Image (cartoon, rainbow over all chains, first blue to last red; front, side, top):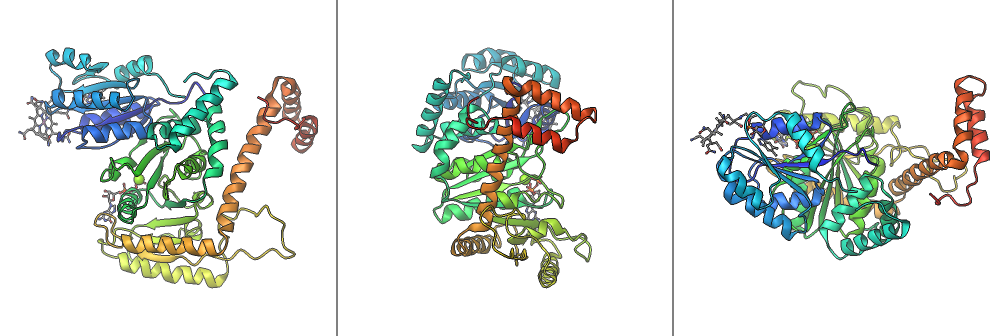
Length: 134
Length: 352
Ligand code: B12
Ligand SMILES: Nc1nc2c(ncn2[C@@H]2O[C@H](COP(=O)(O)OP(=O)(O)OP(=O)(O)O)[C@@H](O)[C@H]2O)c(=O)[nH]1
Ligand SMILES: [Mg+2]
């Protein structure tokens, strides 16, 4: 079935309580036809990776506005690799300074999305870059 | 994994099944994806896994939106883990009929045991299937059963009154209610209550919980005396030889419990009640729920096979022509079905 929806995990790692963006995105992507698993606040990297594995997610989307992205994101991508999930598309959104974007891309993040990003931009990007699982 | 030749697919499926049975959770997750997407790998995997399943206790958790199903599932995970049982969850949420998208949010409430290796939580979109589950939920449960989970919790979408399908998918059906704000149990949710093996009034910390429980108990006894209700397994007919006079469907006599899922109050009692229901089922030979489940699965596959057979190149033209005749009222739909049925050869239904 070629038309099955992409499965996207949206997680908020760390102690960051800003969940408005993640929720807006989760609902928006649902309306764009994605199957979105929302895991909620205060996720450890292990929780994110376990959820991605059990859900067999095509995309892992991390939302971080707290400034902790440089410590959290590399842990998540390393653990995804350890679990054999290096083919999962990882995207990050929230408050990510430009200088950090290059570093994040080095550790396996495909793209970052800052304030003002539209749902359509994210949806188009995911459709173009995620590889659906059979 | 691109769909390859039959042999490649069989090798894929075999490798996934071997790995999943050896405890590889990623392989298990992949098989569940194949099952959800109804790929050829799923059929191959299920053919190996189904005979290994049957030991798990399948518990359906249903009830109106927001009653606390996910929170209760989380609490049950905790209690079952304390008892040393491995627990799997299949949590179903609705798909949008317009976009096909879904927001699967049940997992948010189930984070306490998120990284426990003996807990496996899978969210599923209903994908247009009515009845509170996805069409592939039963097969997903069978996969988790074969993988060795002792307790499998099936959370339905927040249901109205008629989504009783879960009763056929589970050994034990738990119907959740929340205490009403007013004085009366505002609606007698007959459909749902009739399939309950256990009724749980959750949010026991809210005023009126005990009163709601008493009202439900009184109501369920009244229903029992009136002799209405449906048979275990959502009223599905037994495929075994029918006795001379078929037994009247006997209403269930569900226990009514009060829980507070957020604090864990009443959860040990619920687990005990689940175990008691399970034990009674064992004594009775597990028949009604399991037969209903088996029948539903076989019928679904039969319908798929039949539809596929009618659309193979050799039959497609006849099928389409017959349907056009019905559309033009030149043929009635019964005669059309009879003709199509007579016309297909069923010797080798699995060639596809
Ligand atoms: C609203 C807000 C709050 C609310 C949060 C309410 C909530 N439940 O979300 C409240 C008042 C609680 C709050 C508190 C705090 N906040 Co505040 N907050 C904001 C504010 C003004 C807007 C955030 C917002 O909701 N935007 C709207 C949503 C829709 O946008 P968004 O989250 O950016 O998401 C979009 C994109 O980023 C992207 N996106 C986001 N996530 C993802 C994920 C993926 C996968 C993808 C693809 C895209 C994507 O798509 C979304 C749609 O466009 C920002 C400033 C700003 N302009 O961003 C500060 C800001 C984030 N807060 C900040 C701070 C410091 C705090 C506090 C620490 C303040 C304090 N000292 O108490 C606390 C911490 C709270 C906590 N527990 O973590 C700082 C963070 C600084 C930093 N990172 O270095 C900011 C940047 C303000 C600032 N300029 O200093 N905050
Ligand atoms: N006071 C109280 N609140 C509860 C209890 N159980 C659950 N809740 C709250 O009820 C709300 C809904 O709980 P969920 O577990 O998401 O309910 P649900 O039935 O799974 O909801 P859907 O899946 O959306 O149908 C949450 O805010 C819970 O915290 C309880 O025992 N007492
Ligand atoms: Mg729920």
